[in-house]
Image (cartoon, rainbow, N blue to C red; front, side, top):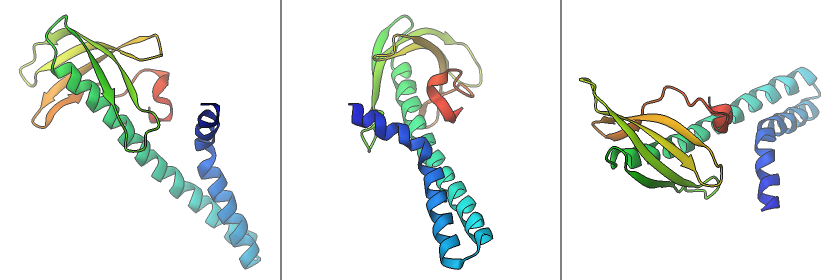
Length: 150
């Protein structure tokens, strides 16, 4: 478990390290530090953008799992939710309780409290029914646990 924590701690440094290696290699190969700097910055920006796309997809999967669980509950009813990612890092599960159904002529919405296993906190969110199913309706998560995805 400790090795996994060390590996995940390095995720924030991947873009910086990639940019430094690419820039250093380009500067060495071209004998021009300006070329190395430009390539290093470009690689860093590309890696950062790619990682953000992946992380947003993982966040969306978690939110969709919660919304589906919320959609299947009656007011006051409790249930469980879970998300299993293709790469099994960051799989989550927990409890969810439907607090209320929100009467809205535009869409059927529900407010729920949910907890993530092992975190000991409860959070409030809203899910609304769309043509494709239940979806997370909060514009942005309001908790630190989403990290850079806010």
